[in-house]
Image 1 (spheres, one colour):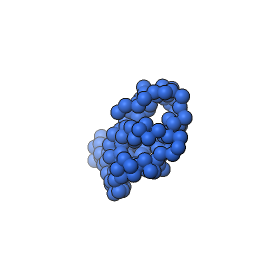
Image 2: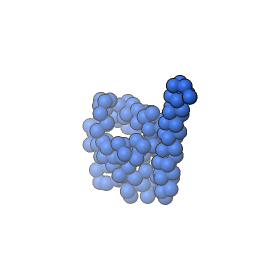
Image 3: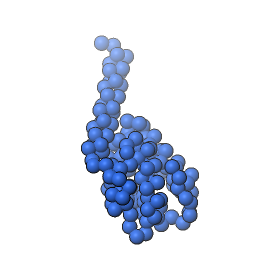
Image 4: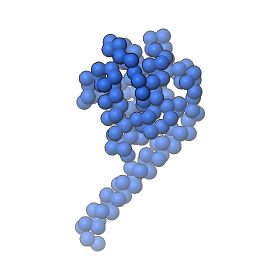
Length: 136
């Protein structure tokens, strides 16, 4: 076996691991009960959080990570289960979400994504002083 074919084999195996990992994480999300908008708002919205803004952000997160927004939960983490879902996409879901937040809300933190959970993101947006109106 030549060195080249060994390297190709390792790259192929690594790629297969990432694809399998993505499907395992996706299956975990998809096994959750899909909530309608009212059920999601019961989980996510508090007195200081605008319901329409919260739903738009949930839709954007779901779209960027390739899952229905109805399966998202407050404790889903950008440095945990969402990242595991996004790693096979080389972080493009996270990158697109950051770009959206910068564009729509004027966030300037491109390097560090401070909120670690969806709940943290929504709370930070609720307390942002941008006054921007989110759109999908």
